[in-house]
Length: 451
Image 1 (cartoon, rainbow, N blue to C red):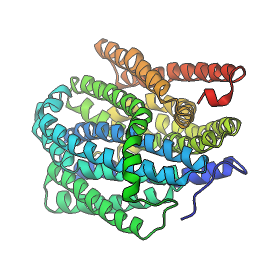
Image 2: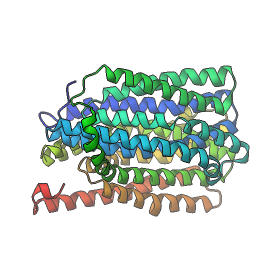
Image 3: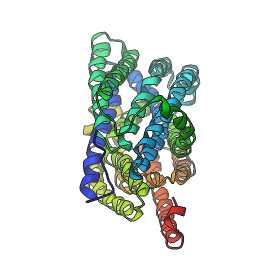
């Protein structure tokens, strides 16, 4: 299989070409959860919508942790490819397989035991509490497939192949849509049906993906000889991946706290924010795709000793991401009702979702800068800073801001939603300052001592 080299030639076109399959994969992944909400919105009640929105937010938190850890594999493989050491990249893969097998077992046990406490922490409305617990337990039974999907995606993005992860998630999305329609629309299984469709689609997708991978030639061999060095690389994968995963976990927790705050305002507010969050998964697709793509692109160039080319890629990514961000901001601010109506027939829920989305419209523009900067720092191996800036934004701005807004009389969901762009502004300032600091250090210290 041909390895995509990002270390030579033009920057913008290869970056965009790599980002497009990532974008499509993220779109299908967002569809994955959106279809669950759409089906229960059409064939269920507001309590079903609230249960799926709260339960899927909990499971999304698990997913982002796994994705963050998997980013350590992407970065390390990318750097080894840039260094022209493909066999060491094979050892990274073996280490990742061992590490993620243990993680899959741990997450399955943890989520089965923690479903009820998590639903309580989320202040799931009484009408939706038992259904939220059921959704989390059924979905977490398939944690091994969540882990396997992210492991496969991280490996292929590291070698510059963003098409294979797209194939994997496309299979899962198609199966999930069919399963939702069958279990919920036909068998009327409600929330349990959406969760069951999710698990079965992930299982079949992973099995088919493994079959596809076995037929393809990798740029390195995977053998027993790679196990011992691979085991030794688990620590390096952890060193790179844990700060990203921890940051993603705490950021997701901050959004769960916001959802818990909103849940205390009543069923309509809970369902409205649940719908808005599903829409926001689509709104943020472009900057999210650039963040993942930037990490792989920059990692190869850092490994090849070309930091200047990596920085030029950062600015190319920001400009192209910003163009899409402006368009999404317009639709989110002025046409939120039309978008929310796709997921609910209840006009109270629709207007609540649209009100919350107007705040996210501002963030559409801001994340064009922030997500590219985060991808750049991840690719440089500066994952500890990524963790710090994410924690500061979440716990010094996002949570306090949303809580204070919720205490005001007659508070709107728009006011609570402003916590997100307020946090993003601070994070951009921190990232810009750190970028300037690195540039100042590079002017005095040899590059090999910086990365």
